[in-house]
Each structure stands twice: as structure tokens, then as C-alpha cells.
Amino acid sequence: MTLEPEQVVRQAGVEKVPDGVKVRYLRDDYAVLFSCAEVRRVEPPHQEADVLTATVLAHYLLTADGRPLTNTFASYRELPGAGIYYGPFVARTVKPLLRAFGEHPERLLLAGRALGGTSQEVGDASITLQILPRLPVTYAIWRGDDEVASSGTVLFDASASGYLPLEDLVVAAAHGAYALLKAPTGEKEA
Image (cartoon, rainbow, N blue to C red; front, top):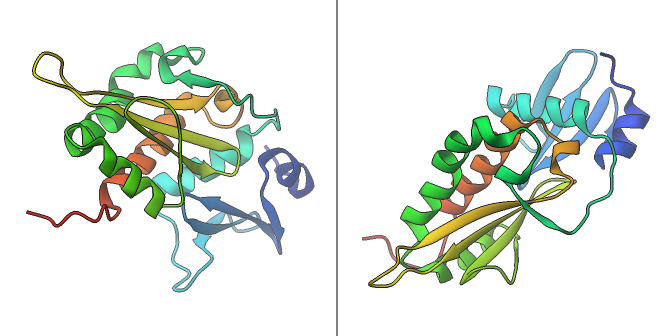
């Protein structure tokens, strides 16, 4: 399949650059160069993207169909055909978030704001990260108590399957979760 830069720019919400496009992935800008099939960070040291990042970006550019965001939350399980990937999705996104923020949901907000996220009205704490130009992902935690364990979820805009295949949605949401785990929360590490 040949990528037409003008169509990709329009459908994926990216910026045209010489020989390709520039894509923001979480907080980093990457140049996807069509002629040499390279994906490189824009900022110095201009390093080549790791395989998972390069794959997600390539699939985003190939899959993006330009549909508008619905501003309606959809769980991963609600996306068409997602059932087979649900276990890996939870293991790579929800469980790490619960371990890190389940007892202290307010720390999720601090971590998310450090990454430029916006808070939402879901659960006891929730934050939306702009993973890709047209792929917002919301991470939410409900605090547990003596009778009920903490719980969490990761939500997509209902349009998400028009921007990435299901397998890549797992990877992209996991990248966001790992970024949250590494972000400063103002708490001193034990």
C-alpha cells in the first residue's frame, strides 16, 4: 500500500514534512519518512524509533480513516472484535495502573497532568492522554475500601478502531500507562 502524504495528513491529523509526515506520539514528535521507511524522533538526538513505536505509528498512518471523534467513551471490550485481546489488554494497562494508583487515585491525576493530560469525571480519578493526534485514551481508577478492591479501566473514544488495529490499541494504551507510571506525582519514592 502506498501512502499519499496529503491524504495521510488529512485523515490522521499529522503534519507534512519533507519526504513524509510528523506525528506526535504521547509527548514526542516522530518523523515518518516514506522513501526510506524510517521512523525517527524529531528532537535531538534524532534516534530511530523502537520497533513497537515504529509499528504503531506506521499502522496509525495506514489505518486512520479520518472519522470524527465521537466524544463518547468505549471500553476496549466494546470495540468490534476486541474480545480475543482483552486479557493482554488488561494485563498491560489496567493491572499496572491499579498497582501504582489503586490506593492513591489522586496520584494518577498528578502523573497525568505532568504528561499534559486532562482530568475527566470518571471514577475517583481519571485522566485523558492524547496518545496520537486522533487517539485520546482515558485512564480511570476507583479507590477500594475494606470490602471492595480498587478497580480501574482504560477507555477510548468510540472512533478508536478507525485509527488503529485492535492489537496496536493495546500497545498504544500500554505506552500511555507506562508513561503514567514513570511520571512524577510529587510523592517521594520509598
